[in-house]
Amino acid sequence: MDWKYTDKIGKMSEEELKKRIKEVMSLDTYKKIRPIPYVGSDEKVVYETSEFVARCPETGIIDFYKLRIEYIPEKKLPELKSFKYYLMQFEEIPISHEHLASKVYDDFQKVVQPKRLYVYLEVNVRGGIKTYIERGEKM
Image 1 (cartoon, helix red, strand yellow):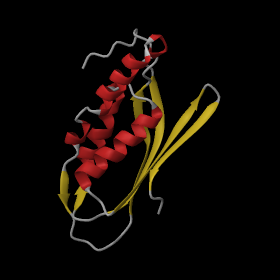
Image 2 (cartoon, rainbow, N blue to C red):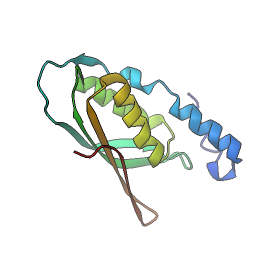
Image 3 (tube, helix red, strand yellow):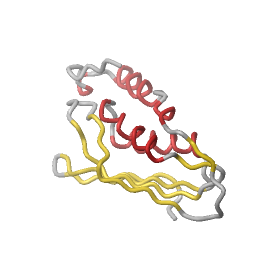
């Protein structure tokens, strides 16, 4: 997809901005996650990375994140190599922090279908502001 970083979101109308956000949120990013069968019992699984990046939708510059996913599997797990590739694709996607957390949550939920899911996204300081986004049921 060809993203035009010169089209600053600050100059977009509300309708143009909504269209751009909806376009990003509707990307089939989840297809990179390969589910594998889970045959264990109720256990909490935690994935954590400080190597998660995505594009700022305003500047096109890389934003850096710490991502933590906690879940209780039902019948599937994400194969971890495919999950790493899933996360890597966001390097080219212009997305706001809040939408990114929701996108990861929705994609994980769609593919893995866990009993419980919690996503925590910590954003590196931007403009002197520290941002944290949480979605789901904290365990």
